[in-house]
Length: 172
Image (cartoon, rainbow, N blue to C red; front, side, top):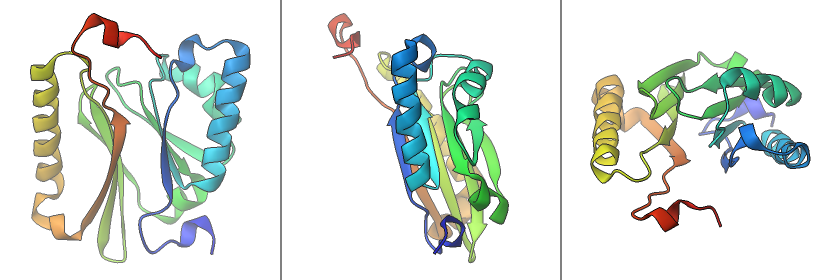
């Protein structure tokens, strides 16, 4: 069965690319190889923590991955969703900016069912802002598909690392 023939939610993955924009050439090559491998095995791959512009991500990274269509989050969200081109062409895709700078999704219908892949980035240190982003995301999803939730399958992923003190902001 080819990637475009799935009757259920297609195989998907999420990868925190950890500062694509500031990566040394050797690290960039390694990250590209990782994402290429993920894209060969999965129909949808979400990438978080790009920390670079859409143009730089596209030109120095996404353009080197075969057979994918990128969907970028607007408003500084640092995410891109990569979708297998054959799968994307076989379905009527919709890309929706859900909460500015915090979340976006792709969705499609298949066999009378709606499928939604949500990418999010919640505020890492401000609990009130994070809670508001979660409430806003919930409200937005409900406004789009609330009447049909029984026929919607959601897969959600993203950057949800929360910090409560300055020493937690450093990568390990």
